[in-house]
Image (tube, rainbow, N blue to C red; front, side, top):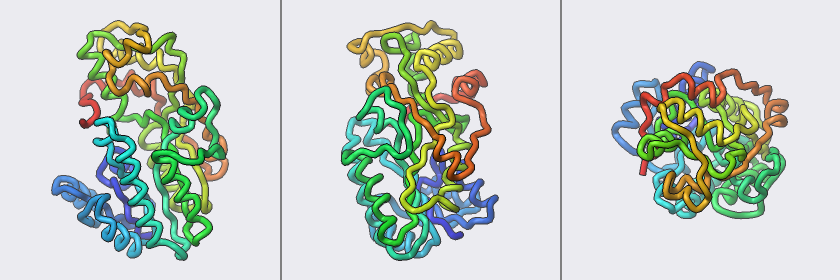
Amino acid sequence: MRLFVTGASGHIGSALVPDLLAAGHTVVGLARSDSSAAALTAAGVDVRRGSLDDLDGLRAAAADADGVIHLAFKHELTYAGEFVRAAESDLRAVEAIGAALEGSDKPFVITSGTALLAMAAPGRLGVETAALERGPRVDSENTVVAMAARGVRSSVVRLPPTVHSSLDRHGFVPALIDMARKNGVSVYVGDGANRWPAVHTLDAARLYRLAVESAPAGARLHGAAEQGVPFRQIAEAIGRGLGLPAASVTPDEATRYIGFLATFAQIDNPSSSAATRALLKWEPTHAGLLADLEERHYFETSQGVRA
């Protein structure tokens, strides 16, 4: 297939593109900067210049493709405290792409997060069939699932808060590492028993490929290789990597130590991927989060989230 991929030069995209090419697909990647365009060209990808705000360009690229994988998101807005604005932009992009694919039976895979379920029902095991009625980013999910009734083989990949590997330069783990280094301590909130699901970048990339190749219309998929790693263990692994202590802080103290991540650090988000594994024969094979932290690449390259 000739696949249009947004976010093709990003964290997951940089793992997905080689996977797609190795499987015999052709990739057209969206690039908003010269550096992204150069990286995609070097990777053997056809480049389409533009951004998520170029809705006409998104529609044209989708119409010209055999399928679309939507990875891009305005994370810089999220990190600036404007998640709602970022989600609104995402919804406009999803609607534009979907309109171009309507009636074609072409695949359209988008990205969401397991943490959305945790915010609605903390501690409850998140499963693929669970869905929320409305909300930021939830609206994109529901819009895409509804496209199944309009002739689009649509699916949603919900990713865990932690998609980890040596390719992860600007996610939550690098941010926590940078904050621990600055503070001289790696913190968790309360007893740190709340759980974060996790997945290795390469396993996540393979799930996207399987989804675009064969996921049924309207599917919600979970990219959780690990159902839930206690946050205290994550903080302790970061402490070991930096040679720093790990310590508990109160919810009120958390913002002082880890800023905007204070809310995320308290999420209890156990997530199952049993239905996804059975449906797509997806079986994660790469290192888990704690083992990945022990490999030390995070502590050599950590840069934190992009502000």
